[in-house]
Amino acid sequence: FNSDQLPIRKDFNPETLKMPGSPVAACIRSMTEPGQKMLVWGWMPCYHLQTKMLLGTRETMTYYAISQGPLQDYYRRRLLDDVRKTAPEVFVDDVCQFNIVFSSPKDRHESFKELADYIAQNYRLAGVFD
Image 1 (cartoon, one colour):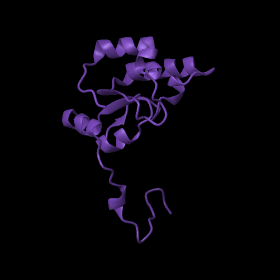
Image 2: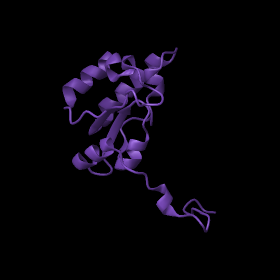
Image 3: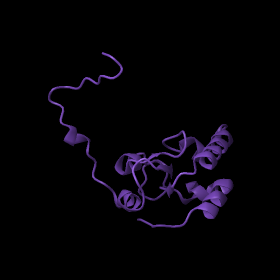
């Protein structure tokens, strides 16, 4: 196959790719256009699919910026550099009790002071969801 060809099974139904939207994604879609950029702090890559927004940083998930480890500072610096360069239209902190990976309040974006300061200076709160 050439790089411009995408073979799919004959019985494939594209309707199976449609995901039910979440209230968070619905809120984001109401304020944005597909193709704008979004940063999700936490582990919720489906928001990019549900909103058709582009990544605001080079990472889909901020696992290494949140998780303690020898490279955490590196990933945090890189993330903050990306955010300053791309200025995503939307920032979502998805650390909550229902998140399967990051549910502790200690993992929220406020744990990264430089990012928390940037968010406070450049974004406004558009919604809080349980």
